[in-house]
Image (cartoon, rainbow, N blue to C red; front, side, top):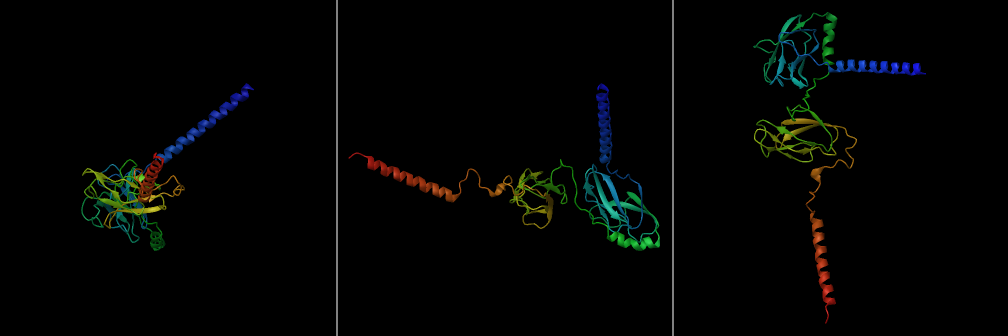
Length: 289
């Protein structure tokens, strides 16, 4: 009996060890992050191939810049994809084999990166006639570039117009502006807010308090400055099973607890006056003659 218990304990310990080892290996795999490209790196590619260019997120001022080359179908845009900044670009189908420089430019820089030192290079391989003929269809089938950015959760929202965070119906959010685009008293509007959000605070940083409508359906919403057309921020409303439950209430639509609605106040005053009159009549009737 003792041997049986000892053997069972050994099997259990071995099983736990195997589970722990599997968990450790899984954690290592999920912890792998894209490696930023070193200056001067050379990327192998084929015509019609989509490439990803990666930079450390710690480099300031890179978000929104363009990655350009004469061999790209269109320039790539560097976007925050925490914990790195990435851009994607597709090699044109008619690109001859060779080595081509890739440069970084500002948001409004030239499409082919004329001038400036190359950042990295792309070595385009030669392909056969059949593969080159099929290349345009391959490029057309590529999914569209994803413009949404993923910033660290601890950063204020929004860091850019495409800093898309996810909120729940009824959740309170704090839009924050830390540049000259907003001032004290300016207001933000969005179809998903219960009302306008008014900016308050110092000149350097102003914030507003907003609440997501309880009846806001899941999807992407835009935020604009009152009276303006340009999109200042975007957010996504989650598909919440509780969005129609009593727990989610639009606070802006509720009367303040210290205020009495006008019809109720009028009724209360009328009742009070009637009570005083009735009391006075009762006293006159009880007065001895």
